[in-house]
Image (tube, rainbow, N blue to C red; front, top):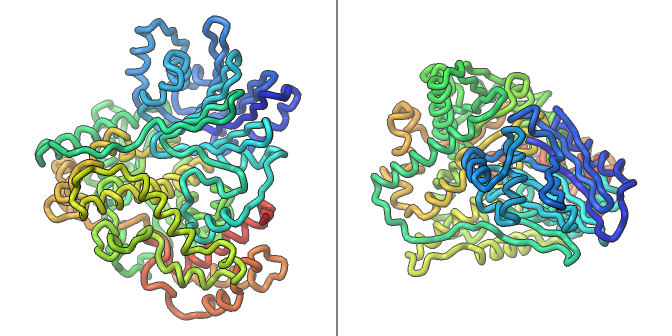
Length: 614
């Protein structure tokens, strides 16, 4: 994995401005701690930071190749999992390779097939190709947005970067936020509208989209989308297809020239990755698979089951690690370091995020990085197979809104009257919800309830899954760790998208079809374990710590947060006993402690990024 950035200006000679792009590139150093590179010409400067995963000698960037009198320059962040097939096809068309990196394969693919190359890629990627002769810049992002890519246009200057901080390092891009950006932070946060950069006039290339910038301006194009069709396979063949696709995806994503591990919670998804990876390691003689799990000091005392967290992970982690003979590492996080990491998580994301849920992942990845460079994680299985509680709730299905955004009215009480009048939280949420439903690929003649479930899957894949992938990328790459997500293989998602709900939930279980596919791979107890999300701390010391910190903020007259909140309401909330929410106000985990921590992160963001509200 890497960090990419660049500046193109077709009407101005910027060849003497390389220091600016060098600074933009330096902001991405955590994403690529192993090497850096810069390429420049009269109208384009591209920067790259490299995390070496494949072909240390032959995969350096920016990568330059020539064909005839044309020069192509590539900066790329990601991994291609069908590199061997692409290399064979390109070799058959006369391409000659100097190394074995997927970077060289990608650049040759663009030189051979042009912008259409993206449809041939299986992987996670964000990349830019500059055509010096044609004076054009092509950007593309993977189908589900696993890898980030932001851009901004200022006059004739076009800037792009893996993270917002790279763009903000350019003098023409200011940390300004308007009413819509505030709505993203306060109404939708920590989720974000696909394609929205929050800062004024900064955009993100949407998943499955590409962008061409040339003398005709900026042209966006969607190169991939889900397609709805009748599912013709019977149950047995469907189970076999899911199993084969998953096995192939996991095995492809174990390829690396550096140590690879898995994240293990003892749940269905992470246990599946671990079981299959351990089998591959054993077959290939790669030694024991290393696995990692997270927990919090005090949780063994303070955890109590609830609808969203039915059981602690630790006993299940032990069981799976012993069953498959992995070398397991327990990462236990204390309250003090968790609270301190809230600011590091903001810097990693460039925005307020999922509070301690972000911070703990950052700390986990930082520990993993000490022993591995690549990890596999079980993200996306719940969005793809329908594992979340709201897939199975009549209230959520008929609620007419994003099911992970709850208690909007209570949350809005935190906002100042001026902010509520400016952003109109409920109206903004409703507008984004309607926009998303208008995109759903419909299946003519589909049963109304089945059609509604299809909407629910689309909402989850395009919104909630993107939020978690965004979190995973920023927190992992901030520590120089590459995380791969095999359940996000587009072939698997495309197939499961059209499996009817009754078949998806066969055996009257959430993700029943996945459980059947994993029969014989996982032991029965793990196959039957009820879903439990990424763990959070239940230690009351954490609540007390963020309560105290937020109290200090609201008593600080210099805090930029104060004009945006109702300080009397927030003060009362911090003094209240018990939890303010009977259900999480966001996702499955975020209740009162996370609301306080989110406001702390907003304050941190406003201060450190010197945000101007315009």
